[in-house]
Length: 436
Image (cartoon, rainbow, N blue to C red; front, side):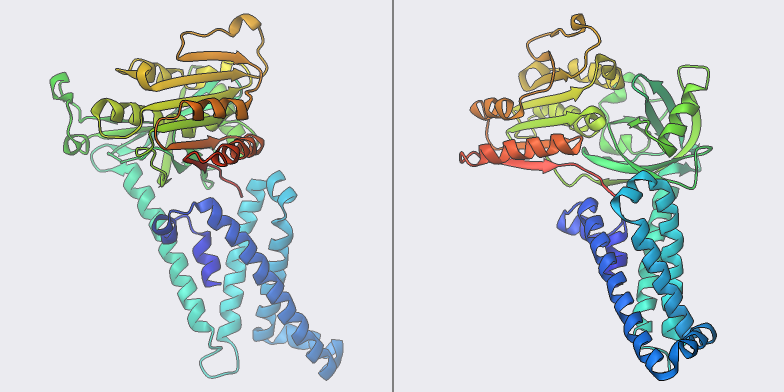
């Protein structure tokens, strides 16, 4: 159970040490949990066989009800089996938020029953595994304390109060959320954070990719002072923005609340825990290709401004960036319009950035037009193998291809990368995904 608890934590120290994503550890956590259930069931069946042979079913039942050592073991096993049944993918994805709440309650019951089971054994000092249960409890408490510290540090300042979020309802059942933190928080490209809102299931927090970051100098800073140093920015505040698609539960409630506000946006008390991840730096690649599907643009757009700024400053190796964004209709462009306007106005942007927009279901063919040779729009879906081969033909140095979007898009991009890697090109592949 020790690795089971470690792998479940979002503050798992192995994530930063090994640069392996939480998504991968979460997969290991699920399979390790299944192994724990199987072992517990086998343990219970083996004991039951001996108990029935010694005193029959009636005797076994009496012992299970009146012996705290045995009763706690049975209760823990039952909770494990229920958790296993609820964790099957169709159930977990259909009722995710319900599953998450049940998971927390059942995990607490399992932990408590295992502790009682070890502590009430007839052996002096309990079972030898009791020491491990204490270690598990300490790990769990440490991880929760780390979360509480992040929440408190990011979202409260004695000088500026608490975090406030501006939520804007956008076309395509999508919300744009900008959280105004009361202090400076350093955020790398490609990170995500867990966010919660007062009045929208505040006991729940969910992960979303950070799309845009702005650091604001302390009030009173003049325009001449905005050749800001890191120390000057640290005295100011940070705004962090997300794009959240409305599906069911939490995200739908948030969108409906913003929509019913009666204005272009609403203000709501919120809290952010993070940022997490951000292990993949693209600064050392000469050529970067970013694939995004729908709201997957939030992860990819976070790289554009730092890469272009680094190119202008001469501090990174990147010399060519291609962004491929696949959207259903042109209304989706509104999601990132304010940020894309900033990017397109950056000095020397045309020398490094090419944008390819693919609109799969345009409402009107007249909407499909290319603003320039570096920002082009096409109807339909992209031919990913052809597109990637063209990028490889014009490759500048080592190439990194990243993808964030639906599973089918990630599969297509991964296969296309494997095809060009077979041609001896230096092409790395990074997939950004988050699954439960």
